[in-house]
Structures are given as structure tokens and as C-alpha cells.
Length: 374
Image (cartoon, rainbow, N blue to C red; front, side, top):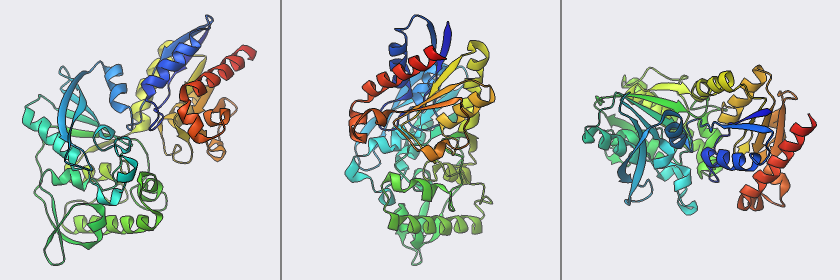
């Protein structure tokens, strides 16, 4: 009897890790010679809340906040553990790329204020909370978290002492600011979906702004605006941080570090803590992981990469099932990593997305054939 542990990440804008896990289980369970266990994962991005609710048995609460591209109110779910006085929030539930219509994806004119408003509502509700665990990733914003801070009183001014709207297209014109340190009744811990700096060649701005909708011509302006503001924060004595700023969430993690002294926990630790427990108790013969696209961004400690690293260290064969797999990203992995690209089963990327579940069926068939011949 072979044991398979299902530990996929979410397939961004396609399917959550919870749903991918359930469907793979349904397909593979047809084979009576397999023992299957589900452990959907999240690196802090899409699907973070659902994974935490499942793993930590959380209560679901809802709050209303504004969408990041309009004044429309909508319900946002959070996960609550009253015993531990812990609240889990997924930033992508509020300011996620998945929630923004294609024609509204202009990160230089969007900000994270809706997330800050949510935190204020939680404070005003009187909920008994000592710590908030915030999954940061999959955001449609790239605003250094300053929209969030504006909900707590941050104001920016240009050289003429005129207040400017807190969106990235205005950042380079900022000359001064107004900020009174906010005293929160809880500590913020950020689960960062990537392990890379905010700025520089491999920084978050250059790596992720384009996929949020920024044109290539806007990326340099965005980075210059960030650099100018960080110097201003330093000169004002707000921060002593620089190279240590985390780039997750379009700089949301960095902003929370600077203004709220947030603790940054890398996705590797968050995932490893859950995964190692299952490795120890379930002792799988094989692991299945994956995400929407496995590429150079995945190597920045995205969820599937973390699972692969742990499996290789414990000599467990791992199937990497992803919509698209960049072959260059597989360099350095051993023979125990078996890649299965869903797009290869179809004529185009769009067709593979439309027939996502069928692609998983094809992948499961390949996995069964591999195990049977092993």
C-alpha cells in the first residue's frame, strides 16, 4: 500500500489549494492500493485563509470594507481562534489581484487602504485579539503599504506642502509627511509569500509589478518613488531598515515593518512547520505539490519550492504538477522531482485553464503509471 501526501499550493486565479487537493484525492482514490492524505498549503498568498481555517480549526468572522478600485463595500472573511486570541487574515481577500477586473489593474493608481480599514474595524469591534497573522501575497497593489498606513493617519505632501493622494504614481513628488505612531492593541505577524528584497535587480518591484498590471515603462518610476520615500522615512527617524525590507505584497510587508514593527515570518518556516509534522506521522512514499506557474519567481521560496526542498532532503519522490513549468527553473533539482505540466496536455494556455480539472485527471494518470512502474 503506497502512501501519497497531497500538498499543492494554490493555482493563482484558477483554483485554490483546497480545491486542487480535493479533486486530486477524488481521482486518485479510485485506486484501492493507495492511502492518500490531504495537506493543502499556502505561502501567504491566494488561499492562505482557507488553508489556515482547515489546519487550525478557526472560526470564520466577516467584516465589510471597500474594494481597492471603488467605494463599493464587500464582505471580507477572517479566521479567529478565541482560545489563542489569534486572528488570521489573507491580504489577497481584500486587495488581491484575483479581485480586480482586468481593465482596473493599474497598480500605480491603487493602494492598500481597504486592508488598513479592515484592521481599524477589527479594533473598533472590541474583538479579543493579541496577534494578527497576515498572509501577504497575491496582491494587486504595489504601494509600499502606505494605503494601509493612511487608514491610521499617514499623510504625504509635495514640495508646496500640498497633500497628495497616496498612490504610487505620486510617490516621487513627495517631499514631506505627517505621521503619529499608531498604538495597535495587537502584534502583526506577516507570512511573506516571497523571500526577496523590496528593491534592486531581484527585488519585488522589478519581479512582480508587471504581473500586477504595471507597464515596463512604469516600473523604474515605481522603484524611484519607493527609494525616495524610504530615504524620507529614514531622515524622519521612522525607520533604520533598508536592505532588510521584505518585498512581499508589493511592499506591503515592508510598510508594515516600517510603520508597525511587524514581525516577518518567511513562507518557508510557515509551510515547513505544517509539512514536517505530516512527514513525521504519515511517512509518505510520494508527495504531490504544484502551483499555477513554476518559474524563477517560484524559486523565491514560493510554496511548491519549499515542499520540493524538504522532499529532496528526506529522499521522498515529489511530483510537481503545475499549469506551466519553466524548464530553467528545474535546474539543480534531482531525479526525485518529477515535473508534470498541465499545459502540455492541451493546445494552448487558455485551453488548459478552461479544462483545468481535465488536466489534473491527465496528471493523475501519469502519476499512477509512474508509481505502478516504480
